[in-house]
Amino acid sequence: MVPLTIVRVQGSDPAVALPARATPHSAGLDLRTNLEKENRADGILLGPGERRLIPTGLKINIPHGYEGQIRSRSGLAFKHGISILNSPGTIDSDYRGEVGILLINLGQKEFRIRHGDRIAQLVICKVEGVSIVEVDTLSPTLRSEGGFGSTGR
Picture 1: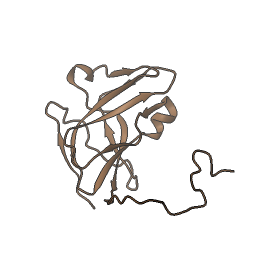
Picture 2: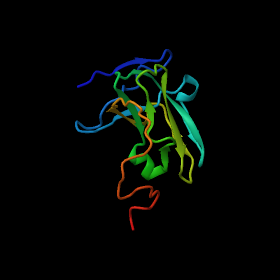
Picture 3: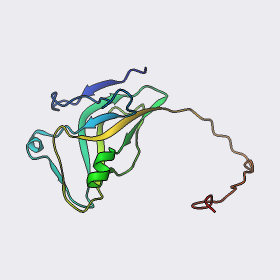
Picture 4: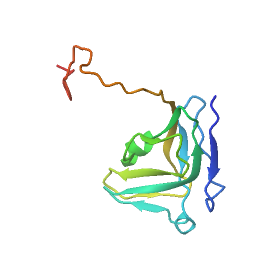
């Protein structure tokens, strides 16, 4: 198992749970909102079509050779249309700032994000390094340059 070290942002609420798996075999760790004091009581209202960067109150030290992927929670997406705008979002191993979750409301009703809510999942994935080699041609394939929708015919 790869260690994932986490620091709480100064002023964040220490009562908000750290990222954790909902079940022993969950791929993702649930991330929770950690709102600023003035928003904790009422939360944040996200209108239809609105996007907002939601704070987690956490800084994460992702080991070199890995990335953090931020993914939507299926229940929020299905029940309310709440999604990650740049899904999956990437946290690079050299990023040391606060993790923010870019939520968008694709639903038709306002949605209230409350302090401590589970709003996203964090999946830690291995990233292979590559070396770039410029060539004159690429190896041939059956698909060739067929783009969007070209493989279903």
